[in-house]
Length: 490
Length: 96
Image 1 (spheres, chains in turn orange, cyan):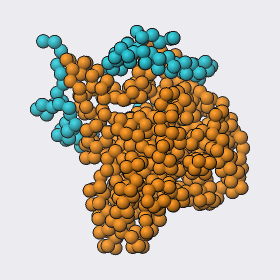
Image 2 (cartoon, helix red, strand yellow):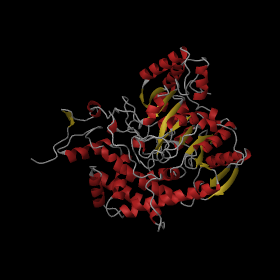
Image 3 (cartoon, rainbow over the protein chains, first blue to last red):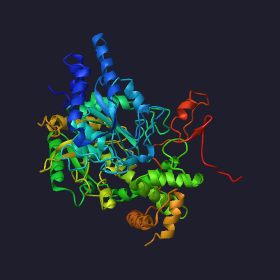
Image 4 (cartoon, rainbow over the protein chains, first blue to last red):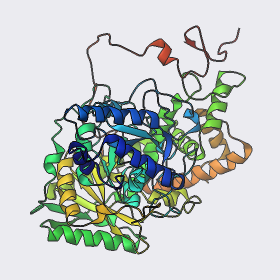
C-alpha cells in the first residue's frame, strides 16, 4: 500500500493505530521522491539523513506508548526563504548559494516542537519575486499535473511537492499570491493568513508590509491543523498581532447555512480562461446549494491594486535587499574598493528579475519621485483596503477565482513581465489589505489542469474561511485527486 | 520616453548595481514600461486619502531593556565572506 498520496490527518491516525510506522511512511515518501523528483524538481535541498532520524525518534515514542501530536512523524517541506538552522537557505538565489542560517525562523521553531519529519527545502522564484518558479537561479520546477507547465509561484516547489506526493505538507510564503496561486495551479489547499498572524521572524524579507507565511496541504483539515501550529504572537516580529488564536479544527464543520458570501464582479476579469470561469461559477452554485446566500459586491479599486503592488513591493524590496552587500553573509565578488566590491557582488549574484525590481524600487523611492509614486501608492492602498471594509459590512466572506487562468506553459510568459503581473489581480488586493485568503481545488479545465477557488475572510477570521472551505470540500472529490505522475498513476 | 539612460545610470548607482552598456537599454525600456503601468494608478484622485504603510494599527513596539542571549560571535561570523580576529573583514574604506 502506498502512503504518499494520503493527507496528514489520515496518516496521523494510521500512526496512532500502529497500522504504519513513521519510518515506513518516510520510506514510501522517499520512494515517491525517487520516482518523480527528477521530473518535478520541487526540492533545492533534501535532508534525508535528519529526516530518517526524526522518523526513528517518533517511532520510539510510539513504541513507548507515548501519545503523539498531529504532525509527529509526518513528512513535510519548507520553502527555501525560511531560515533553518544548519540547513542551507538560498532563497533560490546565487547570492545566498552557501548561506547556512545560524538560527531558526520562529515558524521552524514552532514546527520542531511537533517533531515533524523535515524532508528539505523547496524551490521558488529568486527572493520570492515571480509567479512561476522560473525565476529560480537554479532550475525551474514543473507542474505535477502537466510537466510542460509551471507550478505557479513563488512557492512553486512547496505546491508541487504536495501535489506530487513528495511531501505531505509544506510551508510557503505569500507577498502577492505566492501561496494561493501555486496552490491553485497544483490543485492543493493553500492559505495566506491575516498579516501579523504568523511570525515573519526568520523569513527572508521581500516586501515586509505584505509578506506572510502559511501552509500548503492536501485538504482543509490538514490546513486547519497546520494553522494551529504556525499562528501566534511573536515578540521577535514587531508586526506580529497579539490576538487570541482559536482552535481552527473547531471550524471543520459542514455548515454554511445563512452564510453571506460576496462575489466581486471585478475579479472576473476580461481575458479570464473560460474553463476557470465555468469551474468557479459551478463552485459558487454549489455554495448556494449548501445554504450560503450569495450576493454581488463591488471592489472598484481592484484595477489599481496591481500597479500599486508593483510599486510598493519593489520599493520595499529595494530597501530590504540592500543588506546583500558582500560583508556579513552571502556571496562576495572582490573589487578594487568597498563600493566596487558591493557593485560587483550585487551585479553578479542577483538574477534579472531581482535586479529589475530593485531598480524600479530605487527609482520609486528616489528624490523627486517619492511623493508621485511611493506615497501615491500608499494612498491607493488605503482605497483598496476600504473596498474590502465596505464589502465586509454586507458579507461574511468573499469568494473569487484564485487566478484568472490555469497553469501556463514554461517559458510562455517570459517575453512579457507585465502580462505575468496581471496574473496576480485576484490575489494581490488581499496582501495590500492584510486579509486572509485560501485557495482550494474546485475542478479541472478541459485539459485536466486544476482550478482554485479563493475564499477571502475578514481580518483574523480564518475560522470562517475554514468552515466554508471544509463544507465545500466535503461536498466533492477534488481534494482526493493526486497528480497523474510516476509508476503509480491513478 | 520619460526615463532616460542618464536616469537609469543614477538609479543603478543608488541600487549599487553595475550595468553593462547592453543593460542600459534594457533597463531604460523596463523602467519606462513600468512607469506607463504605474500611471494607471497615478491618474486616480487621492485627495484627502491617508497613506497606509501597513495594515495593522501598531506603532512603536517597545520591549523591556534587558540583556538577552544573542548569537555567539562564532555563529554570527559563520557566513562571513571574509573574517579576521573575530571581525568581518572588508576592503579598505578610508584613504590613508
